[in-house]
Image (cartoon, rainbow, N blue to C red; front, side, top):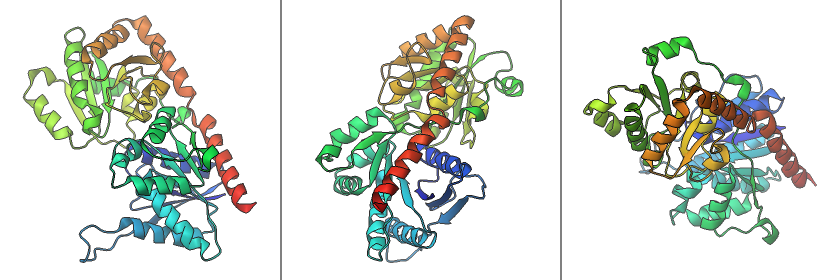
Length: 382
């Protein structure tokens, strides 16, 4: 099958999942065309993978360049001349509406290319709830040939916040296909060189990975670390970058309790460091899924997280880690101590994290997408 994938080419979860999905499809013999404004950060060379850049010209008439329209034109061009069977757009804004416009233009030329919209989270729970976007998002989702969400929680949120028709009412309905990891690509034992670099005196290593936006509550990570270090020798690694990083870094510079916090910035393969850590911390205000937590679990790293959104579907309390109320840093610190302070407990949680991550292995999730692709394309050709 010839598939066009539209995504944001960044370090965010939606772009990572879209890129890894495309690479996995290419590995099974499908021809995959990535269509976006920059090369996705996780994209690797493969004979079945092609990249098409969406270039927006700097025309002086526009204060804000019309990316959606340029993307639409590129989708028409690639679908027509590369013979695409299907478009799969990740993140509703503005990809779903661009795909619908491209579909209509192609149909006027006697070419019909179906498109699938995958919802990832903030396109629905944050940005999408802006009233100025709602009519377009609702319209685009209802015109999609299929809509998927990465968790049951996100599916519920979508139906709650958008006046969508359910499948039995003539709408496409929303199917849940979770995010995934390629389990065999993750290291399941610590790298002694990494341990020596970040924990030279045998300290326990906490790690957090995010885009440092307010919704991630990175302040809570630091507060939990401060409480924990009074009970246990521990260091904290913060991976990623974003609007909150400078403020938090400045606070740590002026606080003697943060002298063992290391800011590592953006990393293409954060799991190479995570695999040598002892505990992953994710105290988010909301998470549609929690891909960073799943990646930590794929390394055998237990997770202490909030119990919001799709996180309880990923992190099983008492098995792969511990769940806590949003903002309860005292409980997070107690749970972290219970895991890290007992070697036997830590070993059990490590095993539980690996077993839970195996439920989301690529080999179990990829067939769900392939089956959906076949179903959608078959309906068009019928």
